[in-house]
Length: 418
Image (cartoon, rainbow, N blue to C red; front, side, top):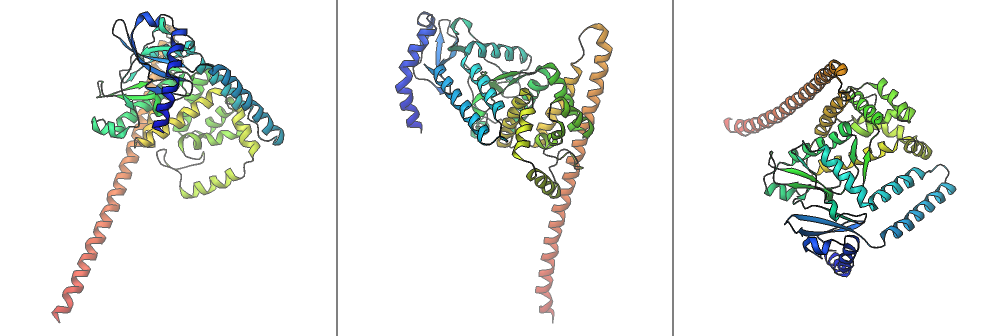
């Protein structure tokens, strides 16, 4: 595979350099150097290392020539297939998926739009020392070429690199979970493609490392009403408020299917009595499987169609986050705590900053702070109980081993006394 990629780069690198000069005519005079061999490749572009005349290192993202036409053809094909499936199987409706695909493709192909997304993220995280967003160089950016600050680092799931640099993977997972939580619950502006290749770990920062976020072609601006209601949904999930979950299900347009929100986000059923940080019992899993098997294809299709498009982006990002945290060996509890912390904080942002709302804002912050402390105490107690259970289990096993050894010794000694 590596040889194939190398051959591909050799075949097209000249085209990309030509495309770069076509779309950024100042490159010849302002780039001190430009590496024709790309150091990274993605679905819509390749990325080249370059140095500006003032010795600043930059990454130049160059779109594949003729890609816009190819994408239009692919989109037409997907649309045709979707309509064909719906015609043969009316219960299967995928129009919502085609619309989302069209939006994401359109956004990905416009590097001016991506540069704007990048600047929004840069502004949102400017006070977060754990998160680094590359700077945009507008003089070298067009709709087909994006020039940004060159950031060094390794993929976030490179465990060998983390061990080599003495970086704790759990701390990386926590920083990532809090960054995603901040996007969803506070900023209302979400990176929609946080796979490992778009997150680098840099061995520099106040905590021994920092995270570099890349590729902002797919970003989603969350409606303010959606942001606040999603904060409320997580508050209800955290404190197991089933009535509130059902009320919010009406807002999100899913009605009775809101009962599956706890399963989707926390791995628990809406009727579950088990603690939040623990998974479902065997009995709960059995009942849930039975319930899910009774759902028809049109039920699932209706559920997905009813969800706001913001919800789909959040679901995708949450799924990517879970996968990454699992690779980093982090617990489910870490993600839940991060979501809880920022969801409660996000609710306090609904007050305006005017002086007439100052008292209400202080009260909300105090109230949500208390609720977060309560949640932390719950998790701490659960951890303590779990630790005691483990100690008791280990002690019981050790005692069994000791008694077994004593019993064997007695059996060995007793015959010799006769």
